[in-house]
Image (cartoon, rainbow, N blue to C red; front, side, top):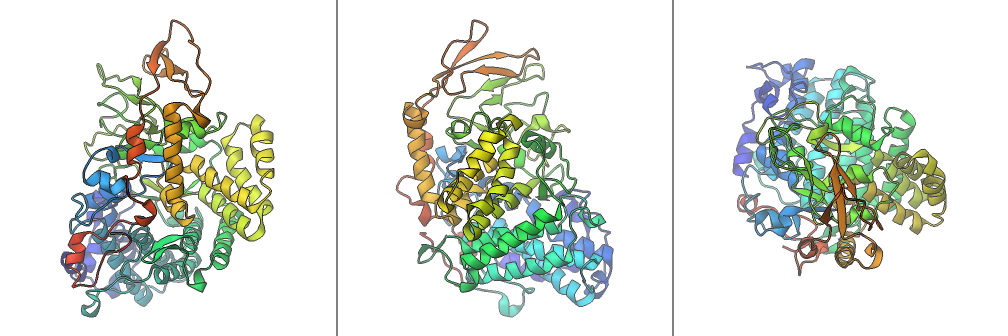
Length: 597
């Protein structure tokens, strides 16, 4: 903490505009000129310099121990649909993902960890916001207005992620002074209200996607994202969370379900009615574009954390596993996590999202530079949303892939609108939004049954809510948003326990999984490396012929059952990580751990 304060307090304004950040973020994102001997009045009254200062707020996300190598790879596990394979090991990585993190965690307990770097980003944002308000004359529709809106949004992102991971945290909305050197935790209710207010201001300042030169890519802040993010925070702030006195909703009347759901619904409807964003017509098409690094604004992706080619570990962590350098990647990585083994069999077989989301193979060791797909077993699945084989460039870095991290996409706008409308206005008001999600998921000839009849049969608020919870599962598996949603719905422990039972049923081929095959069959397509698999579908138990080879599909699932959360731990009592000991020790007695630690 002392090192952080020293960095932040001595943080020269020069550092905000020098392009040192290009090593960490997309080089096209940062193009500010290097200047020296400049004071705030010069920097924040000059658009180019102020732009560099705003861009510098995001630089900490690219540091190894920040979002890049710690927060993105570990936060969000485990859930009823996502399993991190390190949970089956012993040690710090397992502790982080199966609800037993300790303040002394060796992976996290460093003074340059995500906690410190998030606060470094907040301090930069505080300096920039003060400077723009004082010298920039930020008004709606102006370049300075766009910059202030972006700075307010970046600060809100850091705080939202701090609270998502740690609950109540210290709040600083002005640059550090000697009087604010050491602060205790602030109620997250207070912080949420401030962020919601800030984002309300930001939404008046920034332009819609493609409405200005500053909003033509998803690496820049736009009004659709700000409104969607504000809606997300409203839903979280009014939802269930672990407080020091237990799991409950906020007691603050300003964060009531009625008020926050109304705000969320209004913001989502504003985005929908704007016509500035939409679902990609094909679910697979969207994820192909993402892996191809198509960053044009105005589609499904609303905002992405921008990483340079030599930074970022999204595919490095979550892609379909490649065991060696091969025809698709020079980086033999991916596969640190995947869908739980039940997810594939929970999907409707006609749902086009299934085969994009759940991949039952890896790319094996290459021979003469060419690798084949290899079945991994029912106990090992990979997230098919992330694929080196869908990229347009060949990754050569040993540690990073440079693919952006999707922070929000338009599907969330529709699902949030459905959830809020259902609560406030009933299932009929929610139906159009849920139908739009499912219409993209199923072939057109299935729409009558799988979209219209399915949704129209949801006659009560309870039935609609349960369907929305399930739809989030099918739409978002592998995007690590599920944990936050389960917490706000007060379903974390319940859904994890349900998943343990379902894994046991799949393991024993009983209950809903009685007709899942125990043997699958495979051969290779004419290209020599793409699998043709028979036997993955329920009921496919016959031998398809001598051209296929048999592969066992009954690997034991006991390890996953026993490590989806640590035995003896109640996940609802461990919704947050503890503050790491290095920050506790340096807090002058101001910080303490609670929430079950």
